[in-house]
Length: 199
Length: 179
Image (cartoon, rainbow over all chains, first blue to last red; front, side):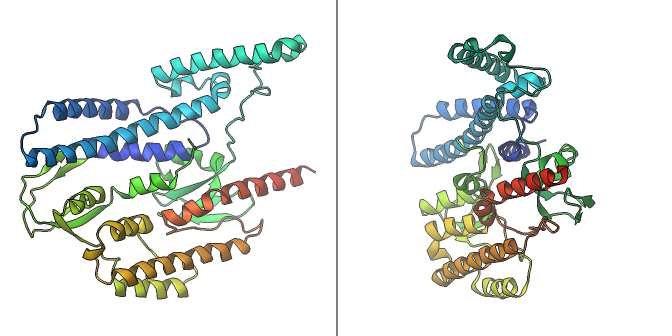
């Protein structure tokens, strides 16, 4: 895959992550490649000594492109951090930690400890012991608003999907390029098969 | 930060759309991260990302060729088609973002830009009212409609409201069934 394609993929990953209610797999390969490319290009730009107007003009274009890719990358990482904070307890309870990068995991661990301590100090120690546990195995007490798996999301079919049974009893014949607003839980397997995209 | 695609973000995505420019300078080409663009020769058309085209335009280093759909007659036909059809007619997903960027930075390169600007606005109004009308027809039995060819700008307009409404309808249907 060329770098240009990887950048496009990262863009698609950002859009998916923005729309999807649960945390998705960290795109480690894409991120690593893009980070390496950004670093070497930035070094190159910094090493240019600007002598002519021509060089200044070129450097401006390189920097502009670089800034766009940096923004894309940081937006992707920040979107995930935002979700990790919102879903911290759920990720821990449901054992989703392998979806995160090493750095994200370190962030989650710290965040989890800080939040648990805060809860303990502010009210948990003041209530009877049997109600204190934060991470019951049956998920019933996760303090997050858990990812609502039935939340509706806009999807675009990348391929012909055919007849799809919908929760209200309706059947939809979904063809390529069709756009529907459907419950996330229903279409989740199709995302993994790359048959649809979240938009 | 909101966990949803915002208008500035969809403008950012739209800026990667390829457009044709006619440079007025000579250059071997630019090897940028998102691809190689060149060689550039005066009066020879070349495709570049929209953001690069706008940058060069602002430096007065090129003329922008508007996309084929940004033409008075094409838009008039599109408007007629849109009015007759019940579904959306086919349009660039980022038509609003692309056209407003071009109208802001390169209007002298767009023939009839005043009329085109008006037509695009009218087209958007028409499409938005189409959404509003179709929403009035929604029933629980006939909830899931095909939004094929909806554009980014119209999606933004309903993104806040519609998914949440559907969530509630779903929730009510489930509780009803449990009774």
